[in-house]
Length: 145
Image 1 (tube, helix red, strand yellow):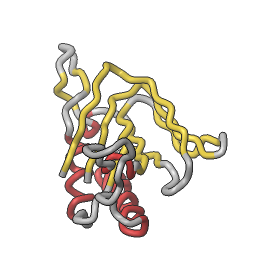
Image 2 (cartoon, one colour):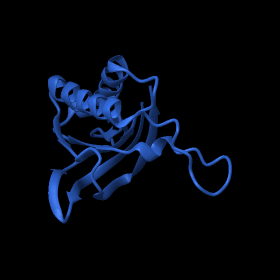
Image 3 (tube, one colour):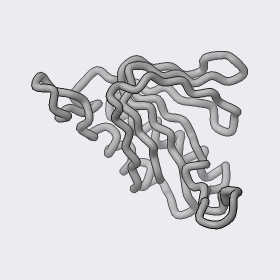
């Protein structure tokens, strides 16, 4: 699994103009799934996101995680994270998992984050989504498990 993680002041996802997921301060996570990913990949990524120390402590250093704060997590499926642009001008998405596999693993990721104690909002798998966010930083990381 691959995630583009942004520390945000707020974020929301809309489908057909309607907000379906929204958070305040926390992490906006665009998540892609590839063929070799499985439940263990989803659990590992959830723990990584839960413990990722990218929030400022009292000294302004990135030492706190979602687990240490009252921040929230927005999880949005993003198959294009597995787009291969090495050849030609059109990305190839053959590395992206099939929708059934990807949807189940995105759901498992969100469920594990909730089990860990996170407040989680999600997008709608397969829908045309508009994601709005306000970066807190800028802090943007690519995670891969």
